[in-house]
Amino acid sequence: MNGASMKKSSRREFLKSSVAVPGAAFMLPTIITHPVWGAGAPASLINIGVIGVGRISRDHDMAGILRHEKEARIVAVCDLDSNRLQEGKQFVEKAYAGKGISINVRTFGDYREMLRSRDLDAVVICTPDHWHAKPAIDAAQAGKDVYLEKPTSLTIAEGRAMSDAIMRTGRIFQMGTQQRSWPGGQFRIACELVRNGRIGKLHTVKIGLPGDPSGNEEPEMPIPKNLNYEMWLGSTPYVYYTENRVHPQKGYGRPGWLRCEQFGAGMITGWGHHHVDIAHWGMDAEYTGPIEIKATAEFPKSGLWDVHGEFNVEAVYANGVTMLINGKFPNGIRFEGSDGWIFVTRGNYSVTASDPKGVTANEQALSASDPKILTSRIGPTEINLYRSEDHHGNWLECIRSRKQTICPVEVGHRGCTTCLLGHIAMKLPRKLCWDPIRERFRNDDEANGYLARSQRWPYQI
Image (cartoon, rainbow, N blue to C red; front, side, top):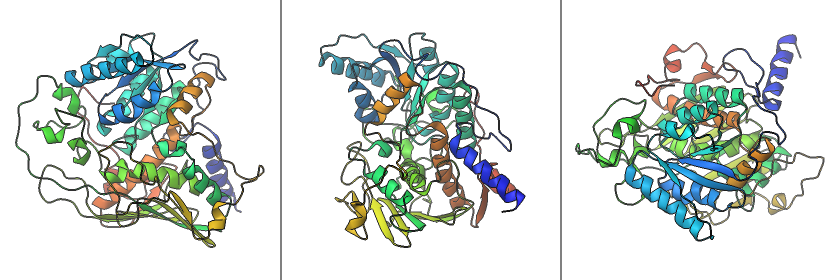
């Protein structure tokens, strides 16, 4: 190995073993602002505030925290829709009342006011994608630990800023890629088998995602008095209000913003972040990304909902593995090696009732080219991956211990980055060359122009 190769290799190993990751072309050590290994953790119950109390918050994240009433309490909720805010308060108080606990949950219409609460230890962020990075940064700077719903950010630049802020402040962070903590552990088992060579040399990963239909043109509607629409738009450009651009005013069905590029990238980040995260776990690529990427996609020619339709993404990594992502594969992750394959999926489980379905219903959550692969025992001297069967519980445990969660911020950022690279490649009809160390495209100013978006005052990072 020549000198240049040795330097690149040692740097890659440092990225994997250290919490500190470069913000640009150089590295700085992580600055821990409080003692670790338990010191500085909450003395009794962990007081939690929830930012965003819509569909995923009620069905998944608040429900996940409420199970741990002996370790933590949701003491405050925040939402820009005052009707949802009051319903969120009632939801939490009723849940605790069923456990014999009386609590008065505080309400906030602005998360920044919530973050000023000195008794608040941590926050769960369940906002639309364009409101992910900034609240996480603000929470870290306010000394709060963070659980963030996926995807990490709207843009790669936002994700880098957020990861740097979390590491600089030393906060405990959990990315909401809960497949790592799936009950039964099939995603971890699949990744352990791949990492330990049970399918030979890995060469291809195939990821299948569910799809999203396009929609109709939608008329301008009066802004509901209960919605702070100006702040809801946040850093994105002002556009007229229509209900299918935001969320239902009655009920908690799937919100329309998920299909608007102004607020997210569509399924490539919506479900893509879940599956790419697992792919990276099995590929041993959690702290890096592809070096080449190309894609094709169909986009609606009319209508309010304008995220991608049918698509295909092909990404090549420095270790020679090729990742293929499209909606024609079964919903899940298939690892293919020289000696066989492993496929892993959620099975028939949905986080919420309104989750979209894949192209096939996969009852078998874990399968392989040879059933003997799945019964292979991972020995104590082999690669044994981080174990968790409760994603929210793991976060709470780490708040007390100050140890790293199963999906820390840099891992979350790198997984989201790969999804966003796929989205950028959908817009540009050519192969793109990516530098995962500098986090820039090589010799491509046009592509680098997609790394960030202009941000509307006063909501910019």
